[in-house]
Length: 209
Image 1 (cartoon, rainbow, N blue to C red):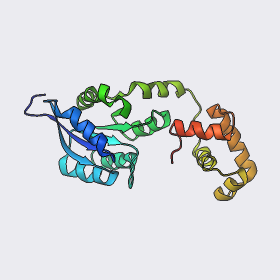
Image 2: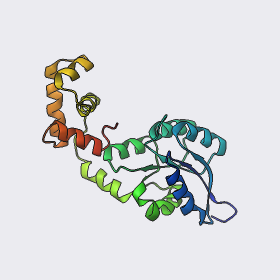
Image 3: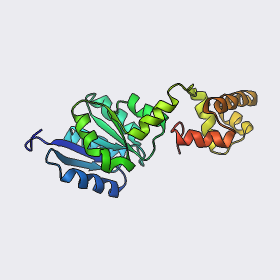
Image 4: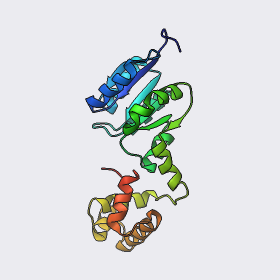
């Protein structure tokens, strides 16, 4: 890298303070420049088309269109896009979803000051990188049995406060089927009860609100 050809960065986050923080970190680097900003997924796609940045910093939790949906859309248009996901959460399920969708980096916002610049340079150079805390979460659950899509739907309804009978009605399945899925969920998540299962599901990013 030379000053004549800095890494061109698009910053996508719905919080102005985060965008300002990133701009502050990047501003002092001779090998980097911010070419665009966006506050939601739809704007991210528009800005990507307009600027064709080298690296995209993309928040996962945003209004209108999520970061994950924007990531998928951008990668559909440009499979070579180098995208670093920014998030508040280290949940392993969320990490896996982002990586499977094509993210090249996964960075916790709490680690921006320590890890952002090195992560940008690594991803621009063609490497993949995951925030240390997120990689611990992945390692901890790598051998776990994953919830099936049906179990995830049930867990989402449990977290919303529905009883088994209500879940059965909403999903058009029998209450016995729901009970069986709840038993599987508790077992797979190592949860003590339904409330504990919902908390684990939210923490690990299996479900979100």
